[in-house]
Image (cartoon, rainbow, N blue to C red; front, side, top):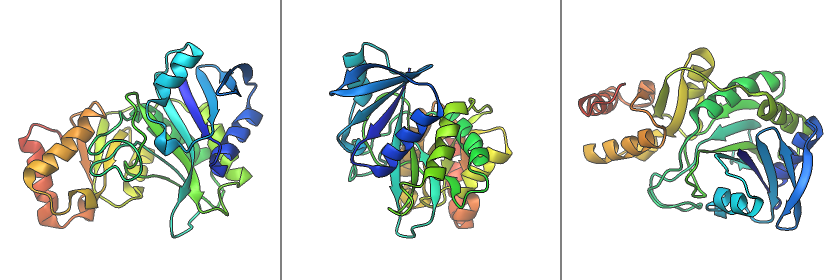
Length: 267
C-alpha cells in the first residue's frame, strides 16, 4: 500500500490532493483524524493538519489506525526557492548532517528508485508544454520514516503553489507512472537541483536512489566521504554510484572515484 500524505497548511499539497481526486474515481471509506480517507487501487490518501516535515513514522501511525500495512510514502508538497523558478520536483529524503528541517541527524530514509525514476519519466510527458521545469532535487530534510519515501513538489513560490495545470500534470503522473528499470545508482555531485541526474534518467535505463550534492562532500576527509556515500548506497539498496565529474575539480573527481572503487563500489 502506498500512502499519499496531504498537509493541510500547505496550499500546494491541497492543490495536488484535489487534482488527484478529480482525476480518478477514488472511494471514500473511513476517517483519519476526523477527515475522510481516499482509496484507489494500491493507494491510500490522507489529509493531516500538520506540516509534513514533522510527521515522523506517519506510515506506522496511519497504518495502525486504518488497519493496513504501508509499504511506501509519498508526500505532496510545495517547494520554495529564492529564484521563484517554476518547477515540478521530486526527491528522496534524509539528512547527511544536521536535522534542521525534520528527520534525524546524519540519517537517511530509504529511497524508492523505481518509483522516483518512473514518476520523473511520466511527469516529463504529462508536464510537456507547461512553463515548469521538471527535475530531481538531491536528498534533503525530514521527516524520519523507515519505509521508502518520496517528496513530490510544486514550486518555487506562492504564485505557483496553486497552479492548476502544474498540479494536474503531477496528478496524472502519480496515477499513471510505471516502475523504472535499469541498475540503481546513487548520484554524487552537482547542486541542490539535479539536472544531470534528471537527464541521465530520461536518456538511459538507470534508476537513481539517493543523491548527494557536491557541497555535502566539500572539505570532507576520505573516511567521511566514504561514510556519507556508503549510507546513501545502503538506503538505496545498491553498491553503484554515478559521479557527476564536471561538478568537481578533476583531482577531486578522481579522488572520489578512486575512493569508491578501492572500497569495492562500482562507479
